[in-house]
Amino acid sequence: MHYYIRLMRLDKPIGIFLLLWPTMWALYSATHGLPGFKLLSIFILGTILMRSAGCVANDILDRKFDSFVTRTKLRPLANQSVSVKNAFYLLITLLMGALICVLFLNVKAFYFALIALFLALTYPLTKRFFVMPQAYLGLSFGMGIPIAFSANEVSLGLTTWLLFFANIFWAIAYDTLYAMTDKNDDLKIGIRSSAIWFGAYVKEAIMLSYTCMMGCLVWVGYLEKFTWPFYGFMGASLLFIGILYRRIKALDPTACFDAFLSNNYLGGLVFLGVFFHYLSVN
Image (cartoon, rainbow, N blue to C red; front, side, top):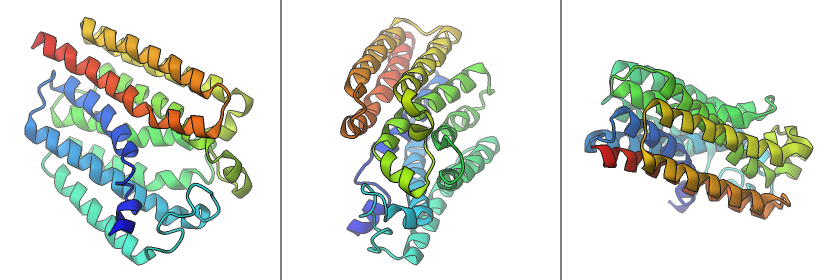
């Protein structure tokens, strides 16, 4: 059982949180801070199932590459602790669970969920040919945003897409930090990543991505007439990004990985801004 938990990365829930936070930004915005227990449960459970399924699909497709990468060579499929057949069975089970969650939503949300499924299952393949698979990951991780608005019968206006693009820029930033830990191995085996593509300007590209993320979020605050709690947490988020920059200045792989993990707190700060805005006005 331990190997299957590791295969789904349930022992490393950072990916669940990075997928969940943008979904929660959207869900609370779409419902004006009142999503209801049923809707919350569906989106949280759906996030866990889809993130787990994405990890299994990733390891099935990357099992031959993973054995040559220091950080991933001990993954259950790379070291053959779990068979590929059993991994497929697990993947199908997780996807069936996610499908059941989506069936409680409306038709429009269901169609967006199908797009999310396609993106999640094809993301690992982009590392073979696309110079910045981190942007594709942002598309995949952002699909909870239109799903949340659609599930609440809210039209997909500028707010929806600004949140969506904020998430894409955020994913480029944090996944580039993550890719820094594998940069040397990726160069050897021919895997693409933004950490390689940005070259000598990787720090600047990461900070530009964070800047674009925050710009999109502040624009959302302006459009939705968010109050001072939101902007207070945006200020805290900017301060947090400044601290991150100091930590990654030397581009030490360990420091970059720790900075990647701490993005969970950044997503949480943004959510708290949205949450306390609606708490103050409801």
